[in-house]
Image (cartoon, rainbow, N blue to C red):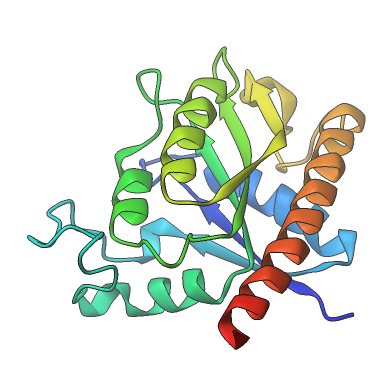
Length: 196
């Protein structure tokens, strides 16, 4: 059986961000899982203007986009599933994540999404709960499992490795199993619909 395409999205572009460390950790675990072909998408590498097209996505789900977004859109469209790596910003998620979500519609449709959160106290849970509502509105399925790193700066060492990996690794494996099950089911369903 062919591996599914999993996009790991680094959801922060803030100077000095910790997101790439967390993204590398979950991407490595996803690669070890064996069911996924992993693509790490760093939103810092894409042109993501906050000003959206005048026509709502319900009327034009594939609007003209800046040239700097072409590669990002292609990679999102190719993915069968997503893991969004996000911090909490003011009890929600970063603006760059809202921008990438709002610039795309069909790329999320009938696909599955998991989350890895990190922050000082909540571990990204406030961002994750907000993102669940947004993705569900776009007909994406968010899996129940997630990974959370409260006080992440104490949990990872200076090399970006977890000091006590057992619990987060267990949570990640459970989430990846859920992602795989739903991604396989939704990929098969999309394939059936496209043939009918």
